[in-house]
Image (cartoon, one colour):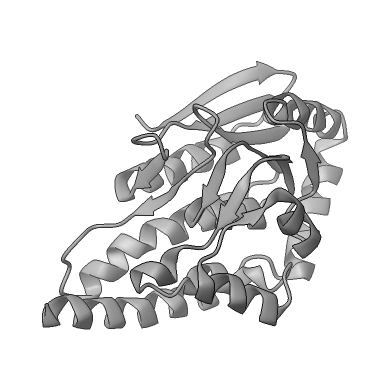
Length: 239
């Protein structure tokens, strides 16, 4: 299974994205598994903070969707796995901290942007490569503008260029930068600090904060999927 979870004690758990190949890519089923794990975390009464990291010093190289789908409904179902993860992530009552080593591309970039606290290695690299494959990253756009000005986010999407941890931090995507190899240690320190707070107070802080910042938009995400589904289905059918 590409999604692993382990309890660290004191109400802290770690989810490891153990994806495929050296790029630590995640397939549609992996995202569905991740959504299921996150949903289970939401019902864990003892959980106080959640850390998400990647295996082999790579956070996540991105999502690899199903190929050759020619019906919009099929494409929508495939893309819907992303929405299931985002919805499950937003529904948690505990803070979510990511520990980013190596690459955070596509889905990995999006997750880093939308969690509550993002720790990244000083040599980590971030990118939205979707447009280089002819796929507009509309789902990410439903929340990226909460952190990054429109012109900067548009430029990152249209160029698909890779940016450093420093540029990602300056853009508002990261919380802090630490030496390479120490992100998980630092993320666990942060998680333990947050886990010590009153859980109801922390849950209210997270819920109200995300609502006030409009981090998650169910209707916006569904609209993004609808638009992308029609475009991709038509393109695949033409080939």
